[in-house]
Image (tube, rainbow, N blue to C red):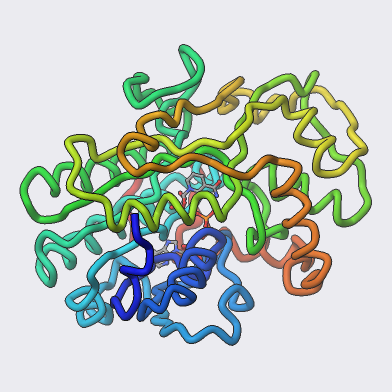
Length: 348
Ligand SMILES: NC(=O)c1ccc[n+]([C@@H]2O[C@H](COP(=O)([O-])OP(=O)(O)OC[C@H]3O[C@@H](n4cnc5c(N)ncnc54)[C@H](O)[C@@H]3O)[C@@H](O)[C@H]2O)c1
């Protein structure tokens, strides 16, 4: 597919101050697209103003749940890249209503605005492998049963289904990319609960040993962010497909121990923390063949190559990403007045 087609095109990137969204927005800008980013800098997510510092990109600071400020940008967008969301499985178990609001209610309101302002617009949604839960077989393809093990997976699945259902109705023309664990420059390293890759990179950069739970034998297929950006760009231009969902996985399946060694060298084993066992999914790696058929996409970057580029980026911009954890830990329960833990009352 010819990515020069993005030249001069207006595009909207939601969650564009975060990790993947900012990499995508910068790449779109380098292709000559007219990029608008929307982000509400939600505490506990990966927003970082430095991610887009100095870039020729319009930023609208609003939440997707209040899309009035976005209507003009939605109306003119030729493609909407919808990456706003909370990725933390742990946060979702501690504050399920917060996760519901971020990942589901906000999406419902935003997609309704898309339907009203730009019916049939191409939307590429950042779905997650988390919807599959514990794999019943490996590698995991798109036919795998859906059985999330945490609220994040349930809420992301609801949002996935909004995209697909509204596409069936002709309101959207959506494609959902179900991402495995993504890593690379601009991922937050200082927000707790955002997954093991940020922790591994942070420890490697601080010269600390990387802790793996148990034997560290669980398999993952980390995918480098530039490869993920390619998948979004290709999906934005792909012809309308029979299938609107595909899995996006990394080039190699490796054990957590191997991943830790590739990133940092020093590895320490500790018993699996009991509070995380219930949401552990064991081994996961992706069957990405449909992405190749649908989009002509496949992961190019090995973990060795991607880790080296990632470490080099953070060494250059150390102070922008490695701030103390405590501030964010304090902020999270204050977010949006949603302070309850595992209580199922209406959101105020
Ligand atoms: N990083 C991964 O490994 C991974 C894996 C699977 C799926 N995903 C999905 O990819 C997307 C991007 O992930 P990321 O790693 O870049 O996360 P991130 O936390 O770095 O970025 C998400 C951004 O979205 C913003 N945001 C969240 N909800 C919003 C709302 N309602 N309105 C406006 N802004 C909002 C946040 O402020 C943040 O800047 C997410 O939807 C996530 O579920 C990520």
